[in-house]
Amino acid sequence: MKHTKVKDLLNGTKTLQEVNAKGWVRTFRNNQFIALNDGSTINNIQCVVDFENTPDETLRRVTTGAAVSVTGTLIESKGAGQNVEIQVSKLEILGDSDAEKFPIQPKNKPSLDFLRENAHLRVRTNMFGAIMRVRSVLSYAVHSYFQEKGFVYVNTPIITGSDAEGAGEMFKVTALPFDNTPRTEDGKVNYKEDFFEKETNLTVSGQLEGETYAMALGQIYTFGPTFRAENSNTSRHLAEFWMIEPEVAFNDLDDNMDLAEDFIQYVIKYALDKCQDDLKFLETRLLDEEKSKPQAERSEMALLEKLNFVLENNFKRVSYTEAIDILRDSTPNKKKKFQYIINEWGADLQSEHERYLVEKHFKCPVILFDYPANIKAFYMRLNDNTEPGRETVRAMDILFPGIGEIVGGSEREERYDVLIEKMKALEIDEEELSWYLDTRRFGSATHSGFGLGFERLVLFVTGMTNIRDVIPFPRTPGNAEF
Ligand code: ATP
Ligand code: MG
Ligand code: MG
Ligand code: MG
Image (cartoon, rainbow, N blue to C red; front, side, top):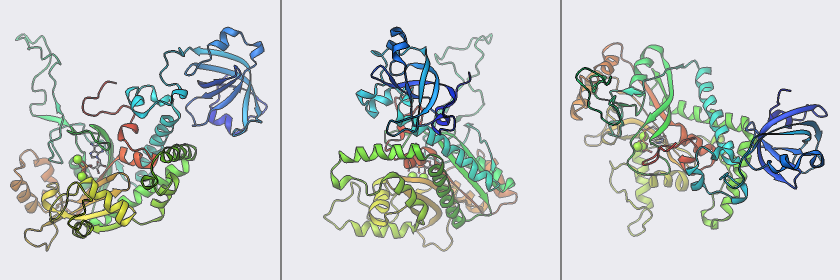
């Protein structure tokens, strides 16, 4: 008999039929009640074992984590919190799980730290099951949004010669054998030291390549892994993360902000519609956690309320200059609200400032725009009519509560001469980026785009607080074990 997914059994349309379910035991109570989960939903199905007619040996092997197959009749359940259960007539153990050794025992309430050390098993908890299903639905929503709008999905290269951000956070790519075995003259080791005949690295952003495609296909997006050798451990940075990067020809900075806001609202709504059970579960878990915090530190909104708030309210658009004034006014001399005090126009905001603007001042998502040119990347469009010494670029960052920056984007410098001048000033090799400059040489036009860190989005939607908990196998300094 073909097994039916637990999710489909729980909707109750098969009541009184003979069914088969396969999954993993979450708990086994009173030698009779198996809570079975197969990953299709956060909810377990209760399986009532006929323990009098089941061999003791089989019952003994029903342990947390074991894989089992249950066959029986789906009946209405009298138990609270479930509509149906399986009255089991045949119980088979498919794979044992040694109760002494299986580390993910619900009764031990494993900590997030412990679970991170067991990244390959943590997905067997309700929490990680929920997070990973939400992540998957959000991925689909990303494609759904852009495809509905006629964007072309472009796969930009993972191995590249460019450092789009100029931040020097690149991982080098080399074809050398790990042990650096010297190559014999007769060519026994078939590696070429200089495989690409130039320095290459793992991509930090697909933007530059994406721009070249936008300048032919009109609207494109990338959605792929990016790599940054972040030199510190924060709860918002990974060395390997997924980035969504749309790029649109003939769009200026305002269009870019509109696109980003609309996109974020669409994907959040999509998750709210499709992941109700998982999000409700995560909300309850968070509320439990909040109870242990002092009143003042508790968040004002529960998860679903927070997500709906983002859908129902426009993001506040604020220029960098206004933001600096707000931050300055909020820190009169003696009050030490921030570790790092901003008192000069031109300074880059730290995440404590971003979070202050979002969480304390505006109390809603914020789009900061028109940043000082010298703290942003070379490719951003210089604003016309800016004061000398106070040049700004048409850049925007979207800041979210609990997270800080979630999006970085800009209108791109479409003027060849201005771009060249900027590259010269920053000592960026024109030869190296000659291919990029071709977009400005041949048919240049206004265009803009942004990068959204997918894991930061998943963080926000799931209400988790550490980015390591929203990607299956997190890569951070010193951590690539799995
Ligand atoms: P941050 O200021 O947080 O370091 P950034 O300004 O360096 O981010 P961008 O180059 O603007 O990042 O990249 C676009 C987006 O990619 C960011 O807004 C963020 O959502 C995401 N992002 C950047 N670096 C990381 C990282 N190391 N891990 C996860 N997401 C990241
Ligand atoms: Mg960074
Ligand atoms: Mg930043
Ligand atoms: Mg940025």
